[in-house]
Every structure is written in C-alpha cells, then in structure tokens.
Length: 232
Ligand SMILES: O=c1ccn([C@@H]2O[C@H](COP(=O)(O)O)[C@@H](O)[C@H]2O)c(=O)[nH]1
Image (cartoon, rainbow, N blue to C red; front, side):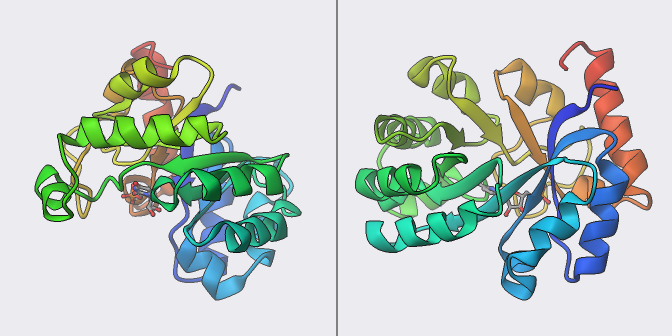
C-alpha cells in the first residue's frame, strides 16, 4: 500500500513509546520525525530504534543553528545515521546552510524558515518586517540560494513559497491540524487537505496522531481522508 506523505513527529518522553508509535504508524506514513527531546535524551541510537525493520524514512529535526564550522561538524556527525532530512535554521545565514549541505551530501538539508509557533505579532515583536509570508519567502530564497534542498514553512505560506522557489524544492509543513483539532502551541495552521492542495510535499503531524488513543488508527484515518479527497 502507498503510504501518505506524512512525517509523524515522535515527540515522546521515552524511547519505548517513540519506537511503539513508529511501529504503529509506519504502515500508513512515509516518514517518522525525531526531534530534539528524543535525540538529546537517547542520542544517535534513537534513529535505529524508530526506523526498525520497516525502512521508513527518518527526518532528523535538530534545527542546527551555529557558526558554519560547528554546523558542518554536527551535520557530518549525524549524516552517518542516514536521515532523509536534517533541519537547520535559515536564520543561521547562507554560509551556515551551505556548510550543512556540503557536510551531509546524502541527506536533504531542510531550512526552517519561520517557526510555525510564531504569529504575525511575534514576528513584529522580533523586528522582522512584513507579513509572515514576506519573511518566510525571504528566508526561503536565501536558503535555496545557499543550496538547501528542502524548506520548512507553515501550510499558510506554502503556495507563496512554491511560487518563489519552483517545483524542485521539497516543501515540508508542520502546523497541520485536522479540522476541529486543538492548535496547541501552533500559530499558523491549516488542515492536511489544505496543506497538500497548497503544494506541500510532506506534512509534519505530531500530537493529533500520537495523542490519540490509537496512533496507528489516527494515522490511517488521516491518510485515508487524504486519499478520499484526492489530495494524496
Ligand atoms: O516550524 C516548525 C518546525 C518544526 N516543528 C516541529 O514539528 C512538530 C509538530 O508537532 P505537532 O504536535 O503536530 O504540533 C514538532 O516536533 C515541532 O518540533 C514545528 O512544529 N514547527
């Protein structure tokens, strides 16, 4: 069966839970995502634990942000884990992004443009000029110019970003919530169907799946809804 273009965020407090969630969702989704909490608790071994025998793609969401030499070293260090994607913050600048790209040639470097937890008011508070879409598009152009092969943005900007960077860049969208689901700490959100229709390639979905009584059934339900609507 074809899996849905979803990366399930395995934001668990312990490795057993993360590995169990991964085993439950991998029949239905293309990718599982390891974030800072899990990686900092358990280190590199976490990747093999969630990958299991299924061969599911692993998205390493470490959001590297440091001087270019340090990011190059970190990207090189984790590239042996063979993640499909590794995140860096676009705000680290072009030289930093390029350093990551050169240090991990087998991994798609995904630049986080503007965190999906930030609202338009937050951006103004940070002194960033323009709408969220303006800021995201500026970050996207800079990151792609530095060699990033993927971008992380909210589903609300994805159509504008696609117009900015063209068809060859993988657009990844957290901030995805099925209709009626709680937004929690996400500020710029849309439904899975809206995100794909706007041009997203990979939807990051965490708590709406992992917080469900049966994460496997929740992932299967979202995947089936996307197939029904023709979105995936
Ligand atoms: O801008 C960003 C970048 C990364 N994330 C990560 O995605 C998941 C979202 O989880 P939900 O439970 O679906 O909110 C989480 O791991 C974040 O670290 C993001 O949300 N926004």
